[in-house]
Image (cartoon, rainbow, N blue to C red):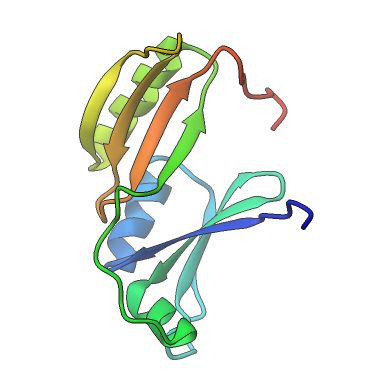
Length: 142
């Protein structure tokens, strides 16, 4: 399999609240909710970096589409890692997320492996790690 992951989808209970958190609170670019003309089709896409999007879709929509039982709210079994260029930037993003309505799960601090990181949960319970990892610095053009 060639690695061609282009969309990470987070299932949510309240699409409008989640849209506001990511668009207004974190400043991620989006065209807003689309697909409302389809039953189970309302979705919001956000541009993360070239070739990668974040999608917000209802839990009911995913259950309908897959035939699986509707899942519970945000699982801490998966994290989304947001890698930044400095410890200061970790603190800034964590504060931006807090002001936008996130719950700080673990304040940013030095890690055992030599980095600096903290965790927050979005309003639906999805877990994000904001991390400065000196071994994996993000490209400025991405």
